[in-house]
Length: 431
Ligand code: SPV
Ligand code: MG
Image (cartoon, rainbow, N blue to C red; front, side, top):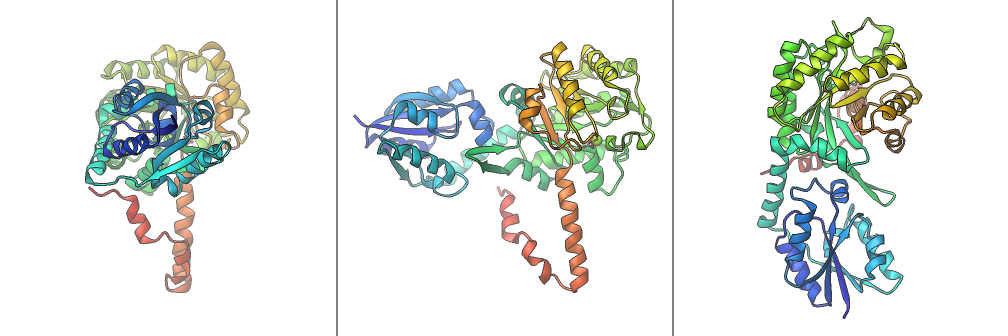
């Protein structure tokens, strides 16, 4: 009997999937591959049901003879393993970005004369509603909040992009690329104090108050599903921080990062060019432990940010602080540097990992931007934050457009570099 293979990347079996199975049956024995959690997160969205449940769902479909695990988006391994006569898929893979998967399958099948069967993709109100319900579930605070911890376990490194509005949230949520045969997308979002302040035309000195920062979070949560890491600056007064933690948990935020500085906070990238005062170990530990005590869920993380390298206090000071902050209850350590070279960051990571193999490490490679995610992961980093690149790319683009309109007394000259209105509208979901 001929073998027909199809891969499922779904939390819900709907009529579209059943249609594929019914078509597949006409050609032979039907084998379904279920995409692993890791591959699904990279390619599509975070699963709302467990991998085991997805396997069971596929097994229970009438006419499916065998279910296997597909742990990569590309089909090389499964095709090698089962050598199917046919691979069947909805014809939505005839256009990018899915087209690269179809091309991958076509070239693999060509080696032994296998064939692709494209079936018309089922898209109707019912299917759209199912899709919308999954997104709604993912955006709920109780689901969103715990996802950062889940991602740290599932992802080699959690890729986090700065967002400061609904629109930038949508970019972090929806941008998927296919590059060199691999799909990728951001895992999480960073509500940067620098960019949240900059978007409001204000300096990054804890001037934009928490009520306003919460409003930014709310704008982002309205239109996204990915987990959020909040830049809590110094955390403010401990008596205030406890309220902030409660509010963030309630909003479905996954983590707050607080830095060990006191007094008027300035942006770390100024380093020692401006006056900045580091907190004492004792005082900051008390802040951490008090904040940990008020936390209500197990999902939320309080991450301690160490400014010793920024303030040129040395590696030993950074490590001593890391030990103390973890002991005080910190769920993670963020180590920062403004050097162009990642050497001191990597040295810290190696030394910290030699003593502590489990506490998550967070880094923000704004200055040391030559380092790759793979290198960071090799040195034990769990979360990488691209903290300000969206803002820094948007600002010069907007400024150049404003200048050209003034220069030419009309908008014609800038038109070529503008996104068509239709396209920007298509980014926004309608109910
Ligand atoms: C931010 O994005 O606001 C940060 C990171 O705190 S940095 O600007 O590098 O200090
Ligand atoms: Mg900040």
